[in-house]
Every structure is written in C-alpha cells, then in structure tokens.
Image 1 (tube, rainbow, N blue to C red):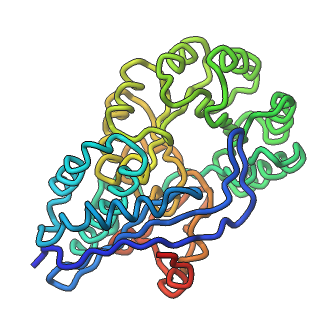
Image 2: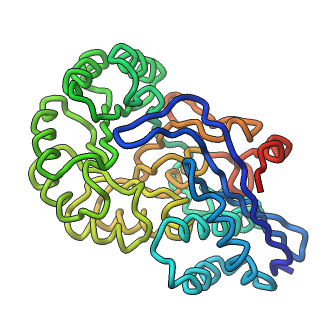
Image 3: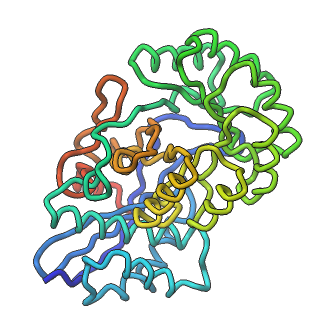
Length: 359
C-alpha cells in the first residue's frame, strides 16, 4: 500500500560554515525544515526546505497544524494531486514565502518516496537529460571579502576547471573589484555579479553600462523582485543578461518575467517556489522561452534537477549541508555529478540531524 500512514515535521538548526554577506543581509543561521513521510508498505521519504535565520518555526507550525493532517490515508504516488490539494487549502496565505517553504518540504518528501519506490535517482525520474552539470562558485565572492580575496577565489575556481565565479556587488569600488577579477581569470571564464535586489532601476542601468566592458555572464537580482517593469527596462538597456528567481514564489511570477522579456536567466529555488513539482514547471516554461535555468542555492538537490532538464546551465556551489550529511557533492572536471542512488540522493546523517534538532 502506498498510502501515507505517518507524517512528521521537525526543525534542524544547521550552523553556517563561513561568513556570508551581500548588499542587504548577512547569512548567519540556517533553519532547515524537514518532513518525513511513511507509507503503509514501509517506505519513507525525507524532504526539506530552509530559511536563513527566521521563520522556520512558522513553517513547521503551518505543516503540523494544517498541511500534514491532510496527507493521512492519501496515495503518496499522486504527487501532482497532493501538491494541488495542499496549495488550494492555503489560499489565504498564498502566494508567499512561508507557504511555499512548507509545500516544498512536503513535495520533496513525496518525490523522495517516488524515486525510492522506482529504484531510480531523482535526476533520471525528473527527466534524465545529462549525467553532469557545469559548476560555478559563490563562496569566494561574498561582499565583505577584499579584492585580493575575490581574485584568489576566482583563480582557484578557474584552476579547478569550474566554469565561473560569482561576485557580490554593493560597494563604491565594485567596478575596480570586478576589473581585477576579470583581469586575473581572463576572457573565457564566466564572471557573474549579484546585487541582491539593492538597486533602483536608474542605478542598475548606470551600473550595467559601467560593467559592460567586463563581459559579465549575468547581473543577478539588480532590483526588488516585485519590480518586473524595472527589470524589463533594464534588460532592454543592457547586453548583460539579467538573472532573477531566488525571490520568486510561484510559476506565475516566472511567467510574468519571461513574458515581458525581463529575465534572460531564471534561478528557481526548490524551497522558495514550493517544491520539485513547480520547479520543473518553471524549468520547462523557461525552455519554451529559450531561457537557461541556473538554480539558486541548494546545490545538493539542484544538481539532480539541473541534470534532469535540457536548459540546466549551471549549479551554484555553496556548501550547505555538510554538517548533517555523510558525503559531499561529487565534482568531476569542473562539473557537479548528480547522485545515482534512489531518491533525492542526499546522504543524511540522522545522528547529526538529531543533535541539531530544535523542535
């Protein structure tokens, strides 16, 4: 029997491995929300989502009080139907971050069950386009780092055969810092920049013009995520591809950006868009617009999804789960390799998770 007999939500506080800063915030804590589902045939699926320091307990409360009780006795194979039912039951709180994070924890658990039952890894069940995806680095590009540290990080990524490195911007000397990085790595290495929604439309147009000689791979989140028209104006004013997505919470929001030509690269985040089910819809929607997908964060999960779809261009390297997993992301010749084990393929360390469990 494939019906759900038990559903549990719990919160694990994972320490951040290093200081991470950008133009608007510091990433100091990672609340990881887990959902574990058990079915009558004895199978289990473990899914998760995350916050960067606030709201985790609210996500768990939504799961425990409203969403998980709806799964009792339901057929776990009906992933699309269950996602739609849970979404419809939260009409008063959608579309929004707390609800999307809760939906994602359930949905990834259902996909884990689905893949385990099939005896296949996620990257094949979700599409199976290619067995590895190019990798780029973000860990060496945080805003607080000196120009010398940025250069060293980019050179290390290039020496390892990775395709690119991302640099956070938001300082008066951004142009000088980026110019030093570009000079150090040469023209064939991708350099991305991320403003983390910190600019006005006018400032973004001005900055893009100044950055034009650097041949940047993309300009990420230049404006607040709800300023679609501003992104469209910027995209029309610059040859630098505009990238958005980590702060979008529904397929419809991505549709609006793509329809209006406001994004040349989309960066959906499984946790923030509500799970694997809507993530794949975003990826296929972007494919219809001939737009690449470079997912945000969650490299341990996104490596499988980027490998599943034909427009998965890059995986972002930010180690997130090493404190609660037994093995790390496999990297070969500058590419991330999706796990070949059935399920999500994340090698959870349950003892380490229990040690950090807060609720």
